[in-house]
Image 1 (tube, rainbow, N blue to C red):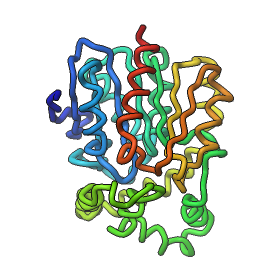
Image 2 (image 1 turned 120 degrees about the horizontal axis):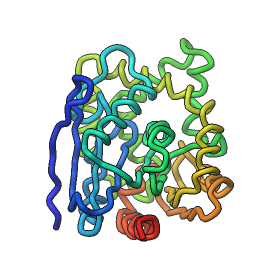
Image 3 (image 1 turned 180 degrees about the vertical axis):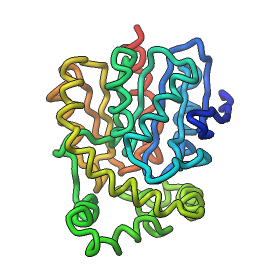
Image 4 (image 1 turned 90 degrees about the vertical axis):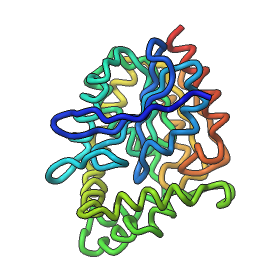
Length: 283
């Protein structure tokens, strides 16, 4: 089994944590994680892909072992640092795997890197208003009335809220490793980090207005694209996956009987279909 390598890259004075596996001379897949997880969520997928591909997973500032941003974080800032990390690693053309927060980070980077992005795997990574499910309602209510919605959002950054994220839509709770939520919560419980995460959840409302820009880029670029979704995800529903086919002619849409953290129950199928798309993109 390939060995995963772990290191920090200094970007703008921040130590950004990177997991890397596979031969760097092979085509690269950059993996962007979701909330509230770190790149540890990608370890099993990287094990399966690293024999054929160069897999690089990057923890955003404030996630996993990466240093947090100074001041209030935004998705613009996460994308700026993550894009610079890709450059600092010497990565040229690449494919990108976007999950959850990975979509708003990844599409911002894609617009900057443009032709370098050869393929997109979006796993419950939303770029269409069609994709918002009932699980987003509490956030939307908070955006409309911060005081009224604050208690619900405070719950998101608790251990119960983190467990809910991991379990959301899963076929069986026993398939979800409880250590994942505990590890994520250990980061959220660091001094100031819960407020940091809430600042990002507040900033998330600035993503939907950018959806038309990202969609226009997809229509123009027509990248190889796989939208592979846990269809029972209450946050980002199947319509969000199906919407990609409106803009990318040859998009492949796959709906799996699992939830938000689809890799926990469907890592083998996701790895196989990701490999198929990469072979197409880098042929």
